[in-house]
Length: 130
Image 1 (cartoon, rainbow, N blue to C red):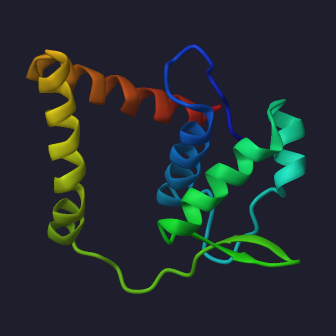
Image 2: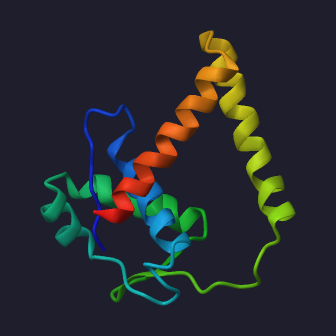
């Protein structure tokens, strides 16, 4: 599992780990049942505090993306049923609402938000290629 952190992009490190693991799963580079890099090993490789990796893995567990088998490791969760695009969009709707509410609160226009989403998408794609 190859992750790349960018400390200057403004996204918390734990969130970068979460986003990249989810992207690796979505792209098929991590598959159901595959073990994630152990916490200490990943922290050493990324030169970060192990607690940051613990935080990221806990978030992934909370979201149902991975499962933790105590004493055995952390694994990509088994995929249950495939969700339809409509179901996926419905799940994303509250997140989009939150992003738009935050943008309005900060005085950021829709064009800048769309540009930001495109920028972050490209950053995730670059991570996948490296």
